Length: 545
Figure (tube, rainbow, N blue to C red):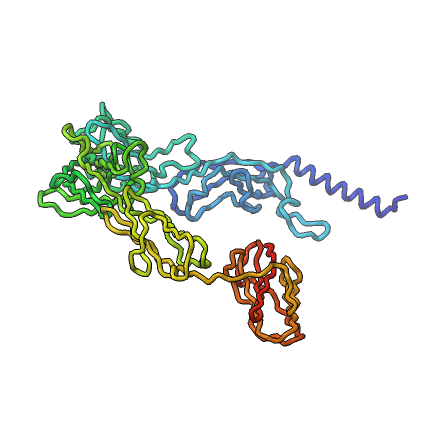
């Protein structure tokens, strides 16, 4: 059962809420003047939006807050319907409106809570009309307009990139930037050949001599500023002409040196840069610096330059099928740089090619001798090189003296100790002599190898483990005293490394670690040759990588 105190409290609270509800149901926030659009240039000072409102009952006041594009940008404030901007910026553009309501300035909390507009509100929240803030950007060019080169009789166009509209009025551009193109300070007018003189793209068709100028400009006139573009121009397309200086060589030429090709070149305008393309046997070849080396020199005739080209033989010149590699027919095409449509070829009706000759190629060494060779006495031996050219003579030398042989191979069926020496081969043709590298040949005495697995009665030999690992050892136990040497050889008996050389006493065991990391062995079979006095034994070992 509720107490009398509780019942009294509930009745009092109900009466209070009823009075507030009654106040809210009768009080209103009346908007007297709506905010208006603001249209100003970026950088303008002391601009504002405002709304005028009054409460329907004098004892109340109005609270305001402002929103931009639907989002609150201020807190609730009392009796202040003005939104002020210090300096306008383009980013401030948007749709603004105010929200407002009537509140009781004398409201106090029954529980000691601080004053708040929400608690003191006595009317519904109403919204003003939305107003546009147009912050117009002054027109500005984003980059310079470039000069163009256009041939007489052809057409061309110029365009520019600029900021001429604001973001918030681009869909309904009420605030235009006026555009005007000028030539030599005279405004251009649209006509039969000219269009777009008041737009961002100027088009001129059927260009004639009077259209050329270095003083074209564009003017942008907006609500906020008037600016001019950079000065640019329209020029005539450059042309080129050239002729061969001093005739041209015909006949055999050695490819060991360059062949000079001299041209007198004239461009309009004078000294305009140019590009070129070489053709060999009617087909284009790369303008590679390994094939061509050019220089531009003064010329005695006004307006001309000497273009001197050295043509070097290159292996690529052999790569045309069904043609003799020594037949070379060259000609050149030139054009002003960037205007290949104005190219000129030095081909005339009398000569299909203006530069015709036959090339003898220099010798190119493809495969050289190795620096060192080791061969066992009595075994066959061969030295071999590979040269590339259309004709080669060979001469083999030993220790600097003629040693016979007339091909790229030098063979010895059965080597003798006196065959050791320094070998070299000379290759020659009409372009000169090309020598191979020098090879040192060493003939070693033939070694006598006893049975592979037989054991001498004078010594006991064990290898474990075999195939070899990093822990493999050779154990030698001799029944007599003497010097023992151990070497490593391949299957042909070529010495690869010294393993051991020392005295082993009778009855003594010598444990030798078999570590061949520094020898660089590959997988395969090798021999350990163990010699004590005149006794030689071998042991086969296996290496697995």
